[in-house]
Image 1 (cartoon, helix red, strand yellow):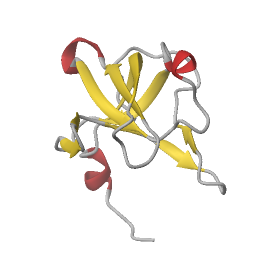
Image 2 (cartoon, helix red, strand yellow):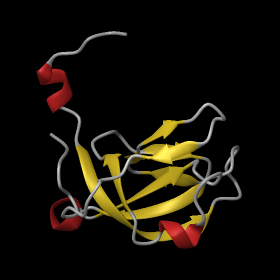
Image 3 (cartoon, helix red, strand yellow):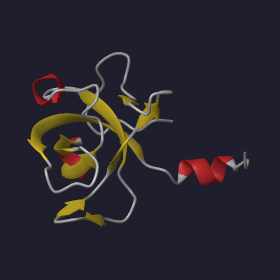
Image 4 (cartoon, helix red, strand yellow):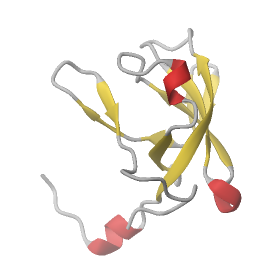
Length: 112
């Protein structure tokens, strides 16, 4: 494990947002959802591709708050442009469990 400084960590914009749209992403190499996440007035709406289909159905994701990195460059994933990285934890079986706030927070709230 490589250690980083507080200065390094402070550069990462980990923000809370609410999933407002979920679509299937059949063109993805691994099963994934196309998400639209609302990060509030300052950041706005961002799109993300998330390989979380093992544990999450589309209906259960709508309205769910998640944590995402919002200051990575955009990334082309097949025909889709991802604008943020929704975070999660890998289980031993490879499924991803979303990293979420324990209680509701304002969209755009920064992890600090």
